[in-house]
Length: 77
Image (cartoon, rainbow, N blue to C red; front, side, top):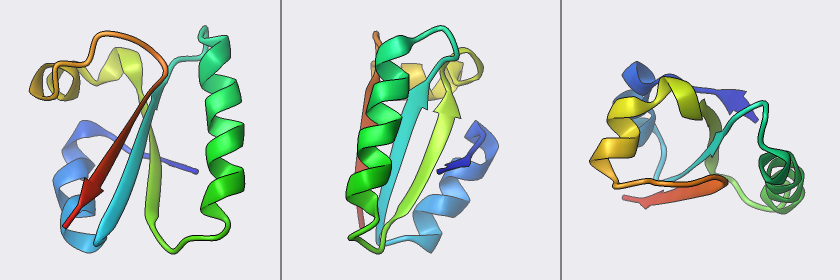
């Protein structure tokens, strides 16, 4: 999965009909497991998929009322 910043999210939403953003942190063990599982599932689907760093996503956390990890967001257009 590719990394995405908050500044790039709106462009990614316009680019993909289906977009998955997984928020992660290097200290989160569950995030590592979640990323591995997502990568396995995403092999079968043509969707945009990105990782966003938890500590660098303050606006995203506030925008969607996110409070814990791991968190995966699914956007449909």
